[in-house]
Length: 123
Image 1 (cartoon, helix red, strand yellow):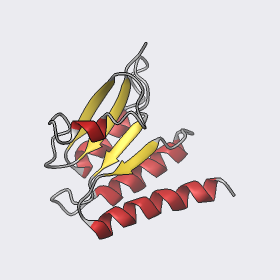
Image 2: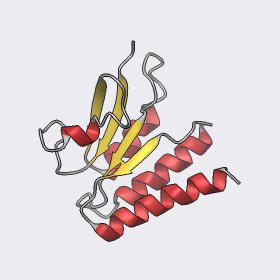
Image 3: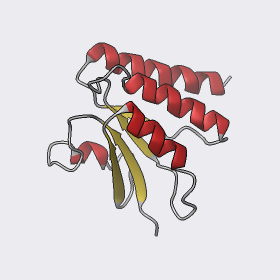
Image 4: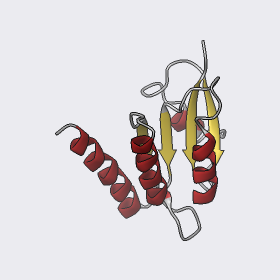
């Protein structure tokens, strides 16, 4: 069985640490073992995503975990917007997305954007 992929977008929180690994491998979203891809910036995220479909032996990630503040001009919301456009352009269902940001306004913006997109699809 192929391991599920989780994309962790955060400039500082280590998804492999004991503190954050339970979020990245939460059994609510992931069944079985997972391969975690840690991306620390918007540029890392977009570059990785643009090549994600090239590897025919790998599955598209089943979970994306976003921080809002990435320590640069572009943030987690910009990554979410890019992911939504990527999924639309490639006819891929938007995977499960969660936000682990400690920035309450940023977290709400990310969640609201994802919810609005999903509501638009269900009309």
